[in-house]
Image 1 (tube, rainbow, N blue to C red):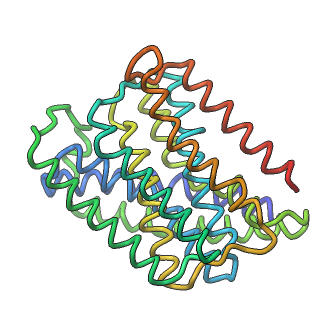
Image 2: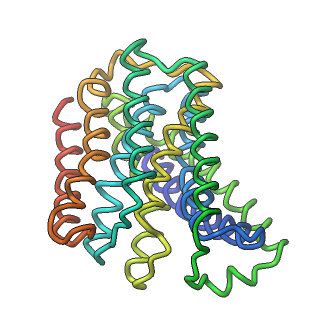
Length: 317
């Protein structure tokens, strides 16, 4: 039954993530938001919804290790797995402006999370409020930058452009319910498997659950790469990582403080440094030939590092 719950949870997250992303983009178009805002805010937040629901559910169930491990593992998976696979399928161009705004914010959130956990071995409510406040500041600055720039002329999906309000609301509802139920099944299955195999919940969180909640980003990125579209960009994944720390852990910490579990010392001694490393490695990769392009070779590098991360996580048992 645990494996069945895990499987059903992953399927529900895939369906829910797809519905939520499409309806969110349709809503943004109805409100006449620019493509930059759609990618870095609505799509990023929508694809972070599985992490948010899983983390809140895990925290309420008394499993902070799963909650914290899920976010750390998802941020590693977004760059190592999702970006690695996407670059492997089709090379991605990196805008020079990316390292002036998006990347520094992701690094800032990553370092701030480490400092909060390092100083008190937990994420307290006031620290969760701080993370949420920084998310608001990030959005305000992002919108101000977007309004100063030119509106993106790239064509959107005609079906999304012509979506009716009732369809957007129905898709949002279906997506939300699927994510909620999927997260419940995923957490239940993951905890049962962890207990039966005597695997720390944090290890399950940074591996199986993290990959499961990164499925919307992975599926959307692969589809975009296969269609040679640039709809799902590097900025979307970076935005998702920012929302994972700022909103997911911020909201979860407001509900209940997140302790670093005693049975998961690797979270602070190993896993969080991998998260920082994957955030920082994007800078040197951008300046390796070809400049400002994530080639297939760079995709292989990211994927190899992710495989090594998972291998070392299970070797530490």
